[in-house]
Length: 364
Image (tube, rainbow, N blue to C red):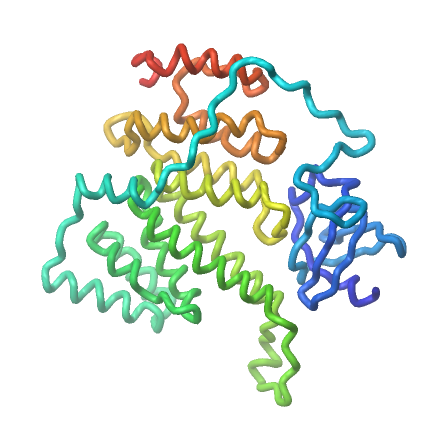
Protein backbone atom coordinates (compact mmCIF):
# COMPACT_ATOMS: atom_id res chain seq x y z
CA UNK A 1 0.00 0.00 0.00
CA UNK A 2 2.90 2.34 0.72
CA UNK A 3 4.04 1.98 -2.86
CA UNK A 4 0.63 2.95 -4.13
CA UNK A 5 0.93 6.21 -2.25
CA UNK A 6 3.46 7.33 -4.84
CA UNK A 7 1.01 7.63 -7.72
CA UNK A 8 1.08 10.76 -9.85
CA UNK A 9 -1.68 13.03 -10.81
CA UNK A 10 -2.22 16.32 -12.55
CA UNK A 11 -4.77 18.69 -11.12
CA UNK A 12 -6.51 21.91 -11.94
CA UNK A 13 -10.01 21.48 -13.04
CA UNK A 14 -9.50 17.75 -13.52
CA UNK A 15 -12.26 16.03 -11.57
CA UNK A 16 -14.09 19.01 -10.16
CA UNK A 17 -17.46 17.32 -10.50
CA UNK A 18 -16.32 13.84 -9.50
CA UNK A 19 -16.14 14.20 -5.72
CA UNK A 20 -17.60 11.36 -3.69
CA UNK A 21 -17.45 9.00 -6.67
CA UNK A 22 -15.82 5.57 -6.76
CA UNK A 23 -12.74 5.39 -8.98
CA UNK A 24 -10.29 2.69 -9.90
CA UNK A 25 -6.78 4.16 -10.10
CA UNK A 26 -4.10 2.31 -12.07
CA UNK A 27 -0.48 3.27 -11.60
CA UNK A 28 2.39 3.07 -14.04
CA UNK A 29 4.01 0.25 -12.07
CA UNK A 30 0.92 -1.94 -12.55
CA UNK A 31 -0.79 -1.48 -9.17
CA UNK A 32 -4.51 -0.75 -8.74
CA UNK A 33 -6.31 1.20 -6.04
CA UNK A 34 -10.07 1.63 -5.75
CA UNK A 35 -11.97 3.95 -3.51
CA UNK A 36 -13.93 7.15 -3.08
CA UNK A 37 -12.37 10.19 -4.71
CA UNK A 38 -12.22 12.93 -2.04
CA UNK A 39 -10.62 15.65 -4.12
CA UNK A 40 -7.26 17.07 -5.11
CA UNK A 41 -5.38 19.70 -3.10
CA UNK A 42 -1.87 21.00 -3.75
CA UNK A 43 -1.23 18.22 -6.28
CA UNK A 44 -2.18 15.56 -3.75
CA UNK A 45 -5.04 13.23 -4.68
CA UNK A 46 -7.05 11.82 -1.80
CA UNK A 47 -8.68 8.41 -2.19
CA UNK A 48 -10.71 6.83 0.61
CA UNK A 49 -10.06 3.13 0.21
CA UNK A 50 -11.06 0.19 2.39
CA UNK A 51 -7.75 0.66 4.22
CA UNK A 52 -8.31 4.34 4.97
CA UNK A 53 -7.53 7.62 3.23
CA UNK A 54 -4.60 7.35 0.85
CA UNK A 55 -2.79 10.54 -0.20
CA UNK A 56 -1.29 10.22 -3.67
CA UNK A 57 1.26 12.74 -5.01
CA UNK A 58 1.23 13.33 -8.77
CA UNK A 59 3.46 11.78 -11.45
CA UNK A 60 2.68 8.25 -12.53
CA UNK A 61 -1.09 7.70 -12.86
CA UNK A 62 -1.89 5.58 -15.86
CA UNK A 63 -5.70 5.94 -15.68
CA UNK A 64 -8.67 6.71 -13.46
CA UNK A 65 -11.91 4.90 -14.25
CA UNK A 66 -15.28 5.57 -12.63
CA UNK A 67 -16.70 2.31 -11.23
CA UNK A 68 -19.72 1.12 -9.28
CA UNK A 69 -19.68 -0.46 -5.85
CA UNK A 70 -19.19 -3.90 -7.42
CA UNK A 71 -16.24 -2.70 -9.50
CA UNK A 72 -18.21 -2.53 -12.76
CA UNK A 73 -17.46 0.45 -15.01
CA UNK A 74 -20.38 2.87 -15.06
CA UNK A 75 -21.70 4.25 -18.34
CA UNK A 76 -23.37 7.11 -16.49
CA UNK A 77 -22.59 7.79 -12.83
CA UNK A 78 -25.56 7.83 -10.54
CA UNK A 79 -26.18 11.06 -8.57
CA UNK A 80 -24.22 11.07 -5.34
CA UNK A 81 -25.66 11.89 -1.96
CA UNK A 82 -26.14 15.63 -1.70
CA UNK A 83 -25.98 16.17 -5.47
CA UNK A 84 -28.91 17.58 -7.39
CA UNK A 85 -30.96 15.03 -9.28
CA UNK A 86 -30.96 15.14 -13.06
CA UNK A 87 -33.41 17.66 -14.53
CA UNK A 88 -36.75 16.46 -15.83
CA UNK A 89 -36.54 15.45 -19.46
CA UNK A 90 -37.74 17.93 -22.05
CA UNK A 91 -40.62 16.28 -23.94
CA UNK A 92 -40.61 18.89 -26.72
CA UNK A 93 -38.89 18.68 -30.11
CA UNK A 94 -35.26 17.61 -30.11
CA UNK A 95 -32.28 18.09 -32.39
CA UNK A 96 -31.68 15.02 -34.56
CA UNK A 97 -28.56 12.93 -34.11
CA UNK A 98 -26.17 13.96 -36.89
CA UNK A 99 -23.31 11.73 -37.98
CA UNK A 100 -19.93 13.51 -37.85
CA UNK A 101 -18.69 14.37 -41.35
CA UNK A 102 -15.59 12.87 -42.93
CA UNK A 103 -13.03 15.63 -42.35
CA UNK A 104 -10.52 14.37 -44.91
CA UNK A 105 -13.20 14.27 -47.62
CA UNK A 106 -14.20 17.85 -46.81
CA UNK A 107 -10.57 18.99 -46.99
CA UNK A 108 -10.04 17.21 -50.32
CA UNK A 109 -13.13 18.81 -51.80
CA UNK A 110 -12.13 22.30 -50.62
CA UNK A 111 -8.53 21.89 -51.80
CA UNK A 112 -9.66 20.67 -55.23
CA UNK A 113 -11.35 23.99 -55.83
CA UNK A 114 -8.27 25.93 -54.76
CA UNK A 115 -5.14 23.85 -55.43
CA UNK A 116 -1.78 25.04 -54.03
CA UNK A 117 0.92 26.31 -56.40
CA UNK A 118 3.40 23.74 -57.68
CA UNK A 119 6.96 24.35 -56.42
CA UNK A 120 9.65 24.85 -59.02
CA UNK A 121 12.98 23.04 -58.76
CA UNK A 122 14.64 25.73 -56.61
CA UNK A 123 11.71 25.96 -54.20
CA UNK A 124 11.49 22.19 -53.91
CA UNK A 125 15.17 21.90 -53.07
CA UNK A 126 15.00 24.70 -50.51
CA UNK A 127 11.94 23.28 -48.74
CA UNK A 128 13.50 19.81 -48.69
CA UNK A 129 16.78 21.20 -47.32
CA UNK A 130 15.09 23.15 -44.52
CA UNK A 131 13.05 20.16 -43.40
CA UNK A 132 15.91 17.66 -43.72
CA UNK A 133 18.22 19.81 -41.55
CA UNK A 134 15.54 20.79 -39.04
CA UNK A 135 16.21 17.97 -36.60
CA UNK A 136 19.93 18.77 -36.32
CA UNK A 137 19.80 22.56 -35.96
CA UNK A 138 19.72 24.74 -32.86
CA UNK A 139 16.68 26.69 -31.67
CA UNK A 140 17.62 29.92 -33.43
CA UNK A 141 18.01 28.20 -36.79
CA UNK A 142 14.78 26.30 -36.23
CA UNK A 143 12.87 29.54 -35.68
CA UNK A 144 14.32 30.92 -38.90
CA UNK A 145 13.39 27.75 -40.77
CA UNK A 146 9.84 27.92 -39.42
CA UNK A 147 9.39 31.48 -40.71
CA UNK A 148 10.82 30.56 -44.13
CA UNK A 149 8.60 27.50 -44.46
CA UNK A 150 5.56 29.53 -43.43
CA UNK A 151 6.34 31.93 -46.27
CA UNK A 152 6.01 29.02 -48.71
CA UNK A 153 2.45 28.46 -47.46
CA UNK A 154 0.52 25.47 -48.78
CA UNK A 155 3.34 24.67 -51.19
CA UNK A 156 5.26 23.22 -48.22
CA UNK A 157 2.39 21.14 -46.81
CA UNK A 158 3.19 17.84 -48.63
CA UNK A 159 6.83 18.02 -47.55
CA UNK A 160 5.87 18.66 -43.92
CA UNK A 161 3.26 15.88 -43.92
CA UNK A 162 5.84 13.27 -44.94
CA UNK A 163 8.69 14.40 -42.67
CA UNK A 164 9.86 12.70 -39.45
CA UNK A 165 7.10 10.08 -39.40
CA UNK A 166 9.05 7.35 -37.56
CA UNK A 167 8.02 6.80 -33.92
CA UNK A 168 11.45 7.79 -32.60
CA UNK A 169 11.19 11.11 -34.50
CA UNK A 170 7.90 12.20 -32.92
CA UNK A 171 9.41 15.07 -30.90
CA UNK A 172 11.03 16.62 -33.98
CA UNK A 173 7.83 16.08 -35.97
CA UNK A 174 5.69 17.91 -33.42
CA UNK A 175 8.18 20.78 -33.23
CA UNK A 176 8.21 21.11 -37.03
CA UNK A 177 4.41 21.21 -37.16
CA UNK A 178 4.44 24.70 -35.65
CA UNK A 179 4.97 25.78 -39.27
CA UNK A 180 1.25 25.07 -39.74
CA UNK A 181 0.16 27.28 -36.81
CA UNK A 182 -0.75 30.23 -39.03
CA UNK A 183 -4.20 31.85 -38.57
CA UNK A 184 -6.80 31.15 -41.24
CA UNK A 185 -5.16 27.92 -42.42
CA UNK A 186 -8.05 25.40 -42.40
CA UNK A 187 -6.43 22.93 -44.81
CA UNK A 188 -3.78 22.02 -42.22
CA UNK A 189 -6.30 19.85 -40.37
CA UNK A 190 -5.47 16.61 -42.18
CA UNK A 191 -1.76 16.82 -41.39
CA UNK A 192 -2.44 17.71 -37.75
CA UNK A 193 -4.96 14.88 -37.38
CA UNK A 194 -2.44 12.33 -38.63
CA UNK A 195 0.30 13.60 -36.31
CA UNK A 196 -2.13 13.70 -33.37
CA UNK A 197 -2.98 10.02 -33.85
CA UNK A 198 0.71 9.14 -34.03
CA UNK A 199 1.58 11.01 -30.81
CA UNK A 200 -1.37 9.43 -29.02
CA UNK A 201 -0.15 6.00 -30.07
CA UNK A 202 3.27 6.78 -28.62
CA UNK A 203 1.69 7.89 -25.36
CA UNK A 204 -0.46 4.77 -25.10
CA UNK A 205 2.53 2.57 -25.91
CA UNK A 206 4.60 4.20 -23.16
CA UNK A 207 1.78 3.81 -20.63
CA UNK A 208 1.30 0.12 -21.45
CA UNK A 209 4.97 -0.86 -21.19
CA UNK A 210 5.93 -2.96 -18.16
CA UNK A 211 8.28 -1.30 -15.66
CA UNK A 212 11.83 -1.31 -16.99
CA UNK A 213 14.61 -3.01 -15.05
CA UNK A 214 17.30 -0.63 -13.77
CA UNK A 215 20.40 -0.69 -15.99
CA UNK A 216 23.57 -2.32 -14.71
CA UNK A 217 25.45 0.89 -15.40
CA UNK A 218 24.25 4.48 -15.30
CA UNK A 219 26.11 6.98 -17.45
CA UNK A 220 26.81 10.47 -16.18
CA UNK A 221 24.02 11.79 -18.42
CA UNK A 222 21.56 9.19 -17.09
CA UNK A 223 22.44 10.16 -13.54
CA UNK A 224 22.03 13.88 -14.21
CA UNK A 225 19.02 13.68 -16.53
CA UNK A 226 17.06 10.52 -15.68
CA UNK A 227 14.29 9.65 -18.15
CA UNK A 228 11.61 7.89 -16.14
CA UNK A 229 8.43 6.59 -17.71
CA UNK A 230 6.53 9.37 -15.96
CA UNK A 231 8.73 11.99 -17.61
CA UNK A 232 8.30 10.37 -21.02
CA UNK A 233 4.53 10.25 -20.54
CA UNK A 234 4.50 13.94 -19.65
CA UNK A 235 6.48 14.71 -22.81
CA UNK A 236 4.07 12.61 -24.88
CA UNK A 237 1.13 14.51 -23.39
CA UNK A 238 2.79 17.85 -24.13
CA UNK A 239 3.20 16.76 -27.75
CA UNK A 240 -0.49 15.85 -28.00
CA UNK A 241 -1.54 19.19 -26.52
CA UNK A 242 0.92 21.10 -28.72
CA UNK A 243 -0.72 19.72 -31.87
CA UNK A 244 -4.14 20.69 -30.55
CA UNK A 245 -2.77 24.18 -29.94
CA UNK A 246 -1.52 24.39 -33.53
CA UNK A 247 -4.99 23.40 -34.79
CA UNK A 248 -6.58 26.08 -32.62
CA UNK A 249 -4.29 28.76 -34.09
CA UNK A 250 -4.67 27.55 -37.69
CA UNK A 251 -8.43 27.65 -37.24
CA UNK A 252 -11.25 27.12 -39.68
CA UNK A 253 -14.11 24.61 -39.86
CA UNK A 254 -11.95 21.52 -40.43
CA UNK A 255 -9.64 22.18 -37.49
CA UNK A 256 -12.73 22.89 -35.38
CA UNK A 257 -14.20 19.52 -36.40
CA UNK A 258 -10.89 17.83 -35.59
CA UNK A 259 -10.72 19.36 -32.11
CA UNK A 260 -14.38 18.66 -31.46
CA UNK A 261 -13.86 14.97 -32.24
CA UNK A 262 -10.82 14.83 -29.92
CA UNK A 263 -12.58 16.58 -27.06
CA UNK A 264 -15.79 14.56 -27.28
CA UNK A 265 -13.78 11.37 -26.89
CA UNK A 266 -11.71 12.91 -24.09
CA UNK A 267 -14.71 13.86 -21.95
CA UNK A 268 -17.06 10.94 -22.63
CA UNK A 269 -14.71 8.00 -22.15
CA UNK A 270 -14.73 5.85 -19.03
CA UNK A 271 -10.98 6.32 -18.70
CA UNK A 272 -9.77 9.75 -17.60
CA UNK A 273 -6.31 10.87 -18.68
CA UNK A 274 -5.14 13.32 -16.00
CA UNK A 275 -2.35 14.60 -18.23
CA UNK A 276 -4.78 15.83 -20.89
CA UNK A 277 -8.06 16.78 -19.20
CA UNK A 278 -8.77 20.51 -18.78
CA UNK A 279 -12.18 21.50 -20.11
CA UNK A 280 -11.61 25.24 -19.67
CA UNK A 281 -8.45 25.13 -21.78
CA UNK A 282 -10.14 22.97 -24.40
CA UNK A 283 -13.29 25.11 -24.70
CA UNK A 284 -11.09 28.18 -25.30
CA UNK A 285 -9.05 26.36 -27.93
CA UNK A 286 -12.20 25.17 -29.67
CA UNK A 287 -13.54 28.73 -29.65
CA UNK A 288 -10.28 30.15 -31.00
CA UNK A 289 -10.44 27.66 -33.88
CA UNK A 290 -13.22 29.78 -35.37
CA UNK A 291 -10.66 32.14 -36.86
CA UNK A 292 -12.25 34.60 -39.34
CA UNK A 293 -15.95 33.72 -39.49
CA UNK A 294 -17.26 36.90 -41.09
CA UNK A 295 -15.90 39.65 -43.30
CA UNK A 296 -13.67 39.75 -46.36
CA UNK A 297 -11.12 37.32 -44.88
CA UNK A 298 -13.70 34.79 -43.74
CA UNK A 299 -12.62 31.16 -44.10
CA UNK A 300 -16.08 29.78 -43.31
CA UNK A 301 -18.90 29.23 -45.76
CA UNK A 302 -22.50 29.24 -44.61
CA UNK A 303 -22.55 25.46 -45.07
CA UNK A 304 -19.51 25.19 -42.78
CA UNK A 305 -21.30 27.07 -40.04
CA UNK A 306 -24.47 25.02 -40.43
CA UNK A 307 -22.45 21.80 -40.29
CA UNK A 308 -20.65 22.77 -37.05
CA UNK A 309 -23.81 24.10 -35.41
CA UNK A 310 -25.57 20.78 -36.04
CA UNK A 311 -22.66 19.04 -34.31
CA UNK A 312 -22.31 21.47 -31.41
CA UNK A 313 -25.79 22.50 -30.28
CA UNK A 314 -26.95 19.00 -29.20
CA UNK A 315 -24.02 18.91 -26.76
CA UNK A 316 -25.72 21.67 -24.75
CA UNK A 317 -28.35 19.13 -23.67
CA UNK A 318 -26.22 16.15 -22.68
CA UNK A 319 -25.91 14.84 -19.13
CA UNK A 320 -22.15 15.42 -19.26
CA UNK A 321 -21.35 18.75 -17.59
CA UNK A 322 -18.04 19.12 -19.46
CA UNK A 323 -19.70 18.63 -22.85
CA UNK A 324 -22.34 21.19 -21.96
CA UNK A 325 -19.82 24.02 -21.66
CA UNK A 326 -17.32 22.79 -24.27
CA UNK A 327 -19.06 24.20 -27.41
CA UNK A 328 -20.15 27.57 -26.06
CA UNK A 329 -17.16 29.71 -27.06
CA UNK A 330 -17.28 28.45 -30.65
CA UNK A 331 -21.07 28.71 -30.87
CA UNK A 332 -20.92 32.36 -29.86
CA UNK A 333 -18.91 33.03 -33.04
CA UNK A 334 -20.75 30.90 -35.59
CA UNK A 335 -24.40 31.04 -34.48
CA UNK A 336 -26.74 33.53 -36.14
CA UNK A 337 -27.74 36.47 -33.97
CA UNK A 338 -30.41 36.32 -31.30
CA UNK A 339 -29.79 32.78 -30.05
CA UNK A 340 -31.45 31.66 -26.77
CA UNK A 341 -29.71 31.59 -23.40
CA UNK A 342 -27.58 28.56 -22.68
CA UNK A 343 -30.01 27.51 -19.95
CA UNK A 344 -33.02 27.47 -22.31
CA UNK A 345 -34.71 24.15 -22.98
CA UNK A 346 -33.92 22.07 -26.04
CA UNK A 347 -37.41 22.65 -27.41
CA UNK A 348 -36.84 26.43 -27.19
CA UNK A 349 -33.56 26.05 -29.10
CA UNK A 350 -35.17 23.84 -31.75
CA UNK A 351 -38.00 26.32 -32.23
CA UNK A 352 -35.55 29.25 -32.54
CA UNK A 353 -33.26 27.34 -34.90
CA UNK A 354 -36.05 26.33 -37.26
CA UNK A 355 -37.15 29.94 -37.56
CA UNK A 356 -33.74 31.59 -37.70
CA UNK A 357 -31.53 29.40 -39.87
CA UNK A 358 -33.24 30.43 -43.10
CA UNK A 359 -33.11 34.20 -42.40
CA UNK A 360 -30.15 35.60 -44.41
CA UNK A 361 -29.81 38.77 -42.32
CA UNK A 362 -29.24 36.71 -39.14
CA UNK A 363 -25.95 35.34 -40.49
CA UNK A 364 -24.28 38.67 -41.18
